[in-house]
Image 1 (cartoon, rainbow, N blue to C red):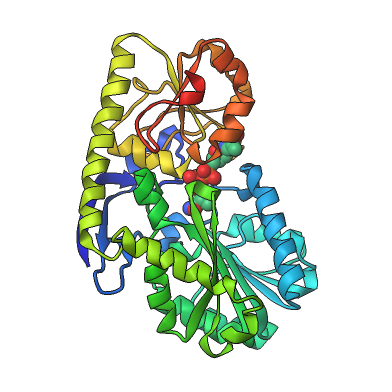
Image 2 (cartoon, helix red, strand yellow):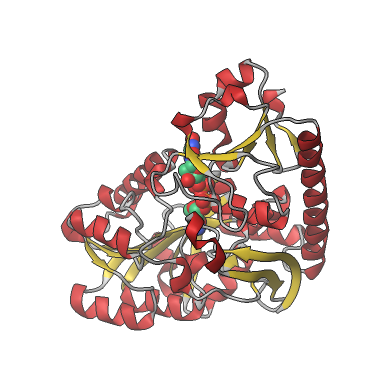
Length: 401
Ligand code: DWN
């Protein structure tokens, strides 16, 4: 693997922090590399998983309200198309996807104890461990094999993918299907959304790289759905190579896979050149965003950020922002409110406790929910407030000019 981007000393992206813990905060070098053989983009140095995913994990899927409908829709679609009797979800968080399934038919894997207790309280059998082959063995012996393995924004968190896919192979019934969705490398490169890179995202997937990796485990991708979720994601449908025919209800399904890979390769996602170009764009993005916020600070303008996201942790620390640049960050998640942003220590407050009209600019920390946030904050724009963003380029968000 060859490293191509260094985003500097970074804290744990979701480790929102109390003031008294500032001095003991953990930092690591956030460096990204590219494997020219497989096409996989991965962190050069992985952070120990239990430093990230533990009983203090603060990200609640259901607090990003549009995701509740997102997971309901995919559950209904999978039930209608494949009618799976037994399912397993890897990374079930607060059960937003799981709750769409009968309690008896579902098993959950969730290493964060605070969330494991949530799904157990909902009645679902939940294993509080990281997904790997030995856990797959245990679950297979205790709960039997499954028709569907589902995972959202989780497979890219798993550092040892070979072991994870071995585990999927172990737990799936012979004609079972594996459906997972994760941020798209192609979208990240197209949008220069470098904030998809942080400790949790051990890998950023292209379909080209995934198909190489899954092939090693006798798994074949038979469909791709391209999603707007989380700033551009892919939903991957895979099954055992020898079973693909069964799931090809309509020939055109397969073309979604070939189309995406062809397009990725036409954009050179298999070459180091595109990664080096991205590195240059990221450096430019930082310079422009720092200049813009520096100018606002010198003009005495007040700036706030909407959404205490993992993504903004990467941006704020890469740009070395502090409460001089952004006075406050708002969020809807009770677990984050009253804490400070990792590394940059900007106070996080409840959106309800802030009058946005006291601010001149609002940074879209949760840019992946810009439609929802701009709709909610139309009064702010109406009173002359402006949204700023760095994706796909640094500037004033056109709809708030
Ligand atoms: O992959 C991951 C994705 C699923 O979520 C995880 N590794 C970590 C996390 O990343 P993130 O923190 O960047 O995710 P979101 O979903 O972009 O976070 C949105 C945040 O913004 C939440 O804390 C909720 C908050 N929010 C808000 O304050 N006002 C969200 C909406 C929609 C709002 O209107």
